[in-house]
Length: 109
Image (tube, rainbow, N blue to C red; front, side, top):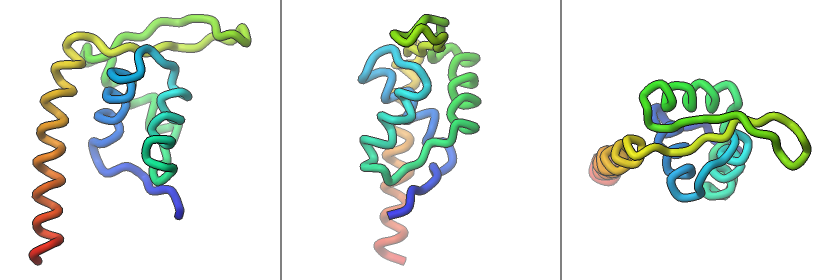
């Protein structure tokens, strides 16, 4: 199965969810976790992930800090804030309502 790109608005939601469930992570770990949980059905493009993380940080939903990895490389570690957890809960409700509506149209159209 070829990997699909994300529907509009899904990447920030999934990045928030991965960070909320898995704790602080760098961008590559977020990418791998999303791809793993989707059973490789979703492809996270580097050119999409980092702008999404930047927007989440600007909104105050995540915070980031530089650190050194075990390989002595600099990496930016992202972590969900309290405001991000609140936004995640609200966005999950909106996303589930929207996908349920699409499913109804697909089923009954």
